[in-house]
Picture (cartoon, rainbow, N blue to C red):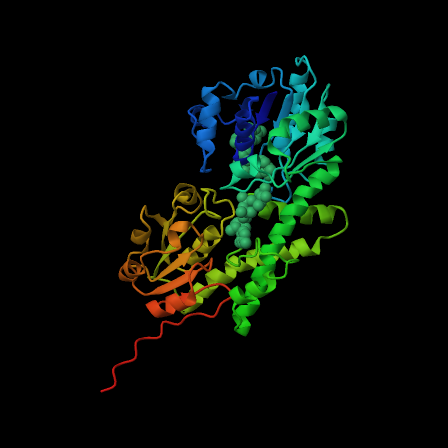
Length: 443
Ligand code: UDX
Ligand code: UDX
């Protein structure tokens, strides 16, 4: 099939590349000319394992092209996927202006298209938006909604081997086209589900809201454990043995970041307000998530008697999660800003996200080596659980740190190990390991 994908961000580029990889002819349209150069060279403008290799294969075969020329992109597609950003606006509401701009471009182009395309809204949009877009587009076309469930860092696998594909449709043509398009990726327990359009839009929000809720839930229990001496690792093991609860998505830590959970939780709250049915659970999920990173930063300030002037703090992990360079709504940004405000000097290391982080927090001294970042630091903070941090050279770390003090936001290390190595070790939902000074030898 001939496919046009509008928007080559984390979602659009993966979508276009995977469809091209299945043999379709794909044109990716983006308004950002700077990006196009990078894309045409087969390089992804962001870190996503395996993406560049798949891009190159289809670019070389002539199945994947990138353009900012709308007439080229809208020449004669069978399907148009709208994958442009839907960020949270100033008013904390979902900004769909990029989607409506694309709808207007499609309206203009429809007049010259020989066959009516299927227009698919893949960007995450509040329930009812897809139909609004359909009303906005003048001309002959079929409308559909097709939310994405791609996790950054595993987006290729999530696309090629989805748990499910959800489509919202109103007619048989869109159903037939999407069935053909997704045929290589579904079956053998990977259902292709067709619903009405509103339900399809709602599935996306409800899924992300549930996942975000699990994270805020375990973090709320973790903060209770902080106060009553229980150990969240044990509590989690005990509760997740219940098959109804399950083990996935229950890691306590600094809470969620990224471009989806934060904005989608706010969008659900907005939909609730608009519908006169406030979504109290989502509101609590959002509040707990904000509180988690503030609590963590303030505990560090408290440890230094509320005075960080002259102190150097090192941060390992700047991306909102491992295997991505994305720092959108990353806890590391809020934590670094709070500590800078308290007078600290901050150094930071991240295998992929350093450049994006520097744009967000230029005052942080970025190092290319994790131990260099920790040099002469009075404390080390871990914000992102990159695999590089899971078993560092602790003796080397102790030598470069001014003090053996770690604030672990992702519970990477065992408390016994930390105690045996003589670290003072703060984590999330577990009793703190005090660096019991070696007792003086009795004379
Ligand atoms: C975005 C939304 O954030 C997400 O909610 C939705 O599910 C899919 O699209 P993402 O791919 O992360 O996810 O967006 P982003 O990384 O912001 O990329 C959007 C791309 O669209 C950018 O490359 C931007 O240049 C491009 N764009 C934006 C257009 O081509 N045209 C526009 O009018 C606006
Ligand atoms: C998420 C959804 O998983 C995906 O289906 C949707 O399409 C886009 O949003 P993503 O944001 O890329 O994907 O990352 P994900 O792996 O889901 O993690 C989201 C956040 O939750 C990260 O900040 C991560 O650190 C945090 N998290 C995740 C936890 O704090 N604990 C967990 O147990 C799992």
